[in-house]
Figure 1 (cartoon, one colour):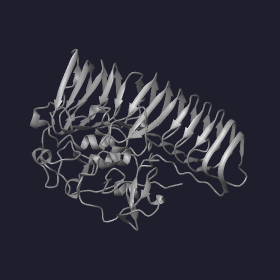
Figure 2 (cartoon, one colour):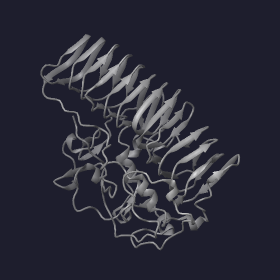
Figure 3 (cartoon, rainbow, N blue to C red):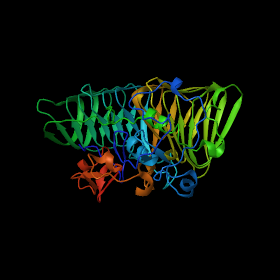
Figure 4 (cartoon, rainbow, N blue to C red):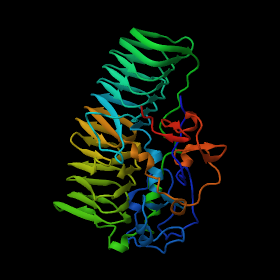
Length: 471
């Protein structure tokens, strides 16, 4: 099995990923660093947030908007970070669950790259890996369009037909009551037991004492060796992004004044529909709450920081202009009653949503989630048929109804335009591939990979670079 790895450049030491920091930025009284754990919304300042004098290494709005690439934001420790580097490390999997993944309904993932072509439902691509740190149980059919990695000792429990278009790694037994097909190798720290046919096109590796007890099997080759499957998803406290800290770092230094945006303007909305246009920039709000339908019109490269919980009864829609992109950071929770329509399914990599709190997030069938959702402390639940263009990362996944995720592999390159000048100073040393923006960390320095084990799983080493596991 491969170890974790990541694409090139630098990530944020300040967020527990070995982020690179620039020279300190002096924040106002509101700008203190916030660390792991959400801060109550009541701590938000009552006075409007305005632009603070920019530090030399933190570009003004004018300078920033003349360039290109993802937004540059403040880190909790006062350095700077490029949001593209945050995204490409966070969303290496189409689905990642820090705990269990429970499915009642069909589950499928496939992949495409919106910069190369649009999504083609008649020819679904691969490279859409699934990672689960505990166990995966599913009553419906399962089709994984890439590797499947399960770190927990309870393993994999399948009722209906299933296939994995990649390598299977499982830290426990595999139970299947219907046919199970694995297109590559399988590393399983337990028995296979099932009433259906087990097909493995590669090599099956199991520890001594474990065997295959399926009704029928067709296995290309077998080996006996110890099997250790690391937890695939980055869920330990030191690896979880400090969302609350990112939000609070922007309270005193943002671009609100440039567009006369009152940070309290979206608190207590009671109108039928509220439309807000956001041009290129980094903006802060004390909160977004109300009984209304909110439409965010994103016209450029935008980072929006929301204190407290984003809670709307009436619906939320995010509209992206051509070439625009949004990084939405929510300090605590996300609660939407009504239609949820985020982003552009033709380019899911351009919308990224980060939620810092532990409150359950409910997605209702019919919602249009066309982006990447990161909620490492929250349970993510869906009811009814749900189609996602992008990626899901949550503490736990509970799915009642069919779930299909179309992973936009372009997310792995959204930090490509994060240059040393805009992202901060490169770290003198790296600890692992996450510090290198998903590329290899070799002898303490970011460099070219030699083998798959140099890369952050599920990425693979190809010609010195860590890339998506495309078949």
